[in-house]
Image 1 (cartoon, rainbow, N blue to C red):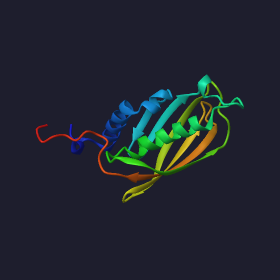
Image 2: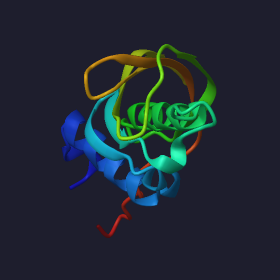
Image 3: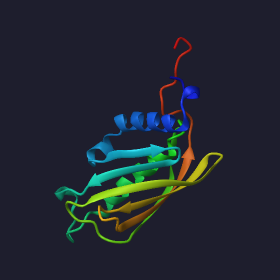
Image 4: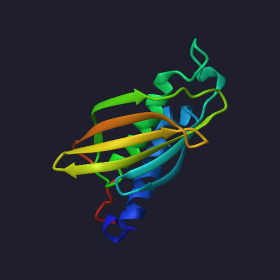
Length: 151
């Protein structure tokens, strides 16, 4: 199926599946891709013992990584290769071992080469753990391999 024959939802899923298959960092987190759509993505991650820092809660770097991955899947859902131009995170509450975190990324705006996205991180009880804000930048290329004229 060519890109032109796909619905926006099918294109977003194809991009996410292709990216996830190559994304060893997100896989190493134990993250699962729960849902994806145009400008949106939802991932989950269990908090493991090796993610706990010296104060007994999940290290902020793992929280940032999960949010950054959700951001990446959301902003690459249009088959336009896109990278982070800048990101910030506010930690609201701690996450602990055995928590299951969900990162929900939502596109706020996308114009020209840039876009703005928010990501909410919540635990399994729906409690807010962190808020992430990312700015994307469209680079050359695509997420999906381009089809040749013989296809």
